[in-house]
Image 1 (tube, one colour):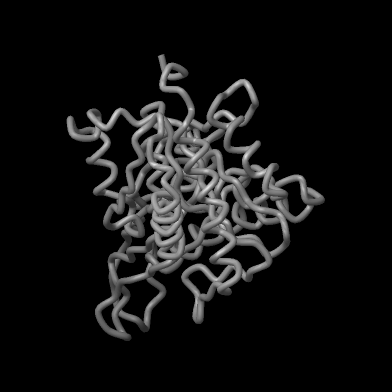
Image 2 (spheres, rainbow, N blue to C red; image 1 turned 180 degrees about the vertical axis):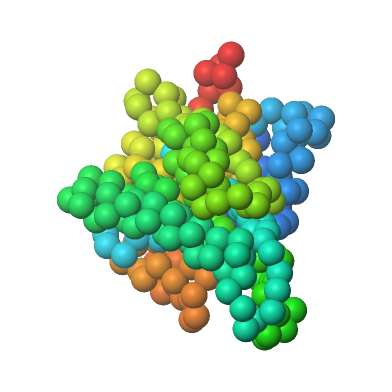
Length: 294
């Protein structure tokens, strides 16, 4: 989120201008490429010697905009599984009833996965607000391809599915995927172009020094907030996977969530209020004694 990156830099500029720069910790600003296609750069970077030498203790990343007056704080996020499914069958002429045809198998598969999707949707809707999108599995078929010409039954369809899985159930979820394939019929295989398995979350109790400072800073600034599992994916998952605390937070409230939509916008007063919040967060988090990591 470009607005968050700009707010980081403006907050630090203000701190530096005010002479507040001798923090107990080093502050790094990292802009990594290709987060929207799965974060391959960050995934590799956290495994390098250069990253290890940064000695990172805590990470702030983008979060979600809120449409009411309560800020959303993400202490974990769902795991993206981008699945390619190949459905193979018998080819033939379009004028015949072809047995073992891919169209029937495609319908069977879609019926199965969309029945699961509906179950998850109803689970969320019937929770009386106790659950968020981060607590259920979301699933969408995003691409369907295949066929040669209109009068030829093809021997294969390829579909792509975007699945997002909460940390608490990700380790066993592939059993569900295998069950879908078995129910849909023979000749159906799957591979993953993205297959994150991270069950790690960041502590959100006052026993954790980072969370205590983070949450108290927001309270001191009269910010109402709620904690949640992020329904999307950020590069923070790669840090959590190696034991580094990471919080997703965008200081945006009373704003329509138009991420990836047309005419996405942020009001000026909301942007500037966010800068003020980051000023205090950066200052307070950067003055946590390094000894707490010992």
